[in-house]
Image (cartoon, rainbow, N blue to C red; front, top):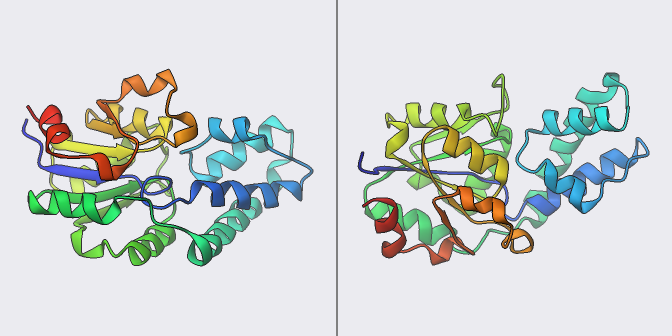
Length: 220
């Protein structure tokens, strides 16, 4: 099918929030005597906060009684941090205008809660381009499960094979490909050379670098 829809992840793709999630999680985890390494944190990038907390609480044998409290603390903290010092990633206005000129249906699909969607839409000024947003927060499964992408496509009245997704995490990439969508990966520079990105249809160093040539490769 011809591509007519684009769906974007948020964290690490539209806004440089991953370091802030890491910072917030580290502050909360230290209350429980846990210090995650950078490598440990990377392995759970793209998961929902509750899955992230449950994974590491299980790993470090912390009781489940504190799960909900820790999750809420992290989300509250990261929203505050993003609002105060979050930076918009290069190419965000450009990429939305690129697809708007092609009359694409445009959506957001994220593991983050709706409050973060609202905050980032406000900070980036992309609200005028959007036709749908979808959060995996209340779904049975988050990324790498494809449901959040399938839900967003359904809201956009698009077939999955008509969609291009833009992602920055491996869990997000797997979710997009599991949904049978094209996926453009824009990994963090520190992970750019990792072989796992070969699963994507296209890898870029920045949203700003996406152009007609790339679009035509994805939409032959």
